[in-house]
Length: 371
Image (tube, rainbow, N blue to C red):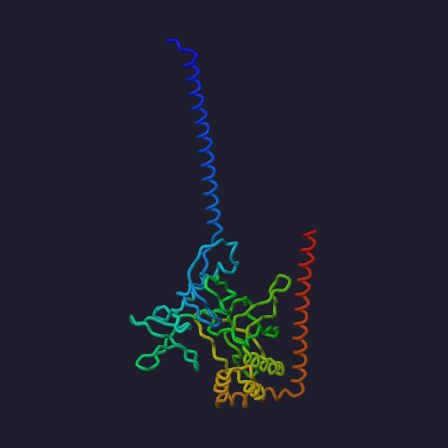
């Protein structure tokens, strides 16, 4: 049957319209597919760039113990948080505060002040700290029941607001909060362990030729300064309180006077589980008087030091062993002291010069690159 020109034209127009519609639909589908692929790729890239960090869910004061109930995790872009925040999750999990039976310690706010609690035997009980001994306890029938914790508490170094990302610079694994007399001290006269690294916890000890060996300061986190991109071979930094600085000064001067004496460092094998050693070095009378009259040292610390050293055992050690050894050095001891003090000062000056030269070299290299 013959098709008239009008019908043929209409059919062709219909087919052309269908073809155009299919073409447009194909373009739209292709566009949507590309958009979907791009979105999926962006989501994958964001996922790869994301990291879980701990943030505070409440305000925290400097020196306050941080318990796990005060924290929550957030997934954020890695580029938006400090690099040292990514490792904090394992630190906090390893140092979650519990007693030896695995009961969690948590924090409640009472009268705008944080209070520690622990649930034992299905009872919520307030966890308190004994000022004289720094031991933790709960009260049962008006008597103290001491609680042994499984780890060293995490302490806030500074005041922090809620939603602050926790970094290693903001917390410390110690139950010694940042006090007004805490200072960063640098020493270059100590014998260091071969494998000592920044972040290790140490005791500083003094040994005399008689075999007497004493702990001067205990359980300090050590930092090894870097000079020209490498660790200093002989210098460490530790944070010490005023009384600890005086103890170190006394030990340094007296060890310098005696040939064969040694100031050295020992490492803790499991700092999180091991309690701090009790210092045993009995300072001389002059240092003891200086500590007693120093307004920068709190009264409780003075009393602890007096109780520690003003007993017959410590007095006998000082009078019968240390004093005779030091007094017997005579003029040779004075010469040793001057020589070793000069060496220490020269080493410190050289290290400072090398450090400044390394900074100048880095600045020059940066300027050259920019040009």
